[in-house]
Length: 188
Image (cartoon, rainbow, N blue to C red):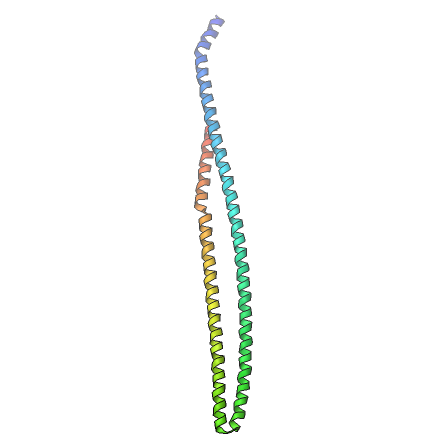
């Protein structure tokens, strides 16, 4: 009798156990697929992190180059200003000399005085023309420096916008988080 009960239980439970075993095998297969997909996503995230690190390093290098160029331009501007100051001092000295010459010429005959005044006026005009040219060059340098700095800043902004897409990164992290939740729910 126990044998017949055991046989009846086997007949009733064995097919169910086999079905459960088959379901478990399918679940394990799906679980392995999901695990592989999560692993692939993790690898992709690691590659994205590496690209971000490389991009940040490139940005740091670009910033260093910009700082170097800015320092060089500021140094050149300082040198130009020093030259302008020297020219200005020279002009002041020359103008003082010219004034002294004019005072001496006042004492000389009128015709000589007029000739000397004309000569000195011409020299002053030449010096003023040179000073105007120098000032024009300074204005050009200043404009070029400002334009170049604006271009570099604009280029950096474009590079930064093109390489760093925080929204895409955040969206990817959210998708990975949702997948992890689903995997955790499947494992329960």
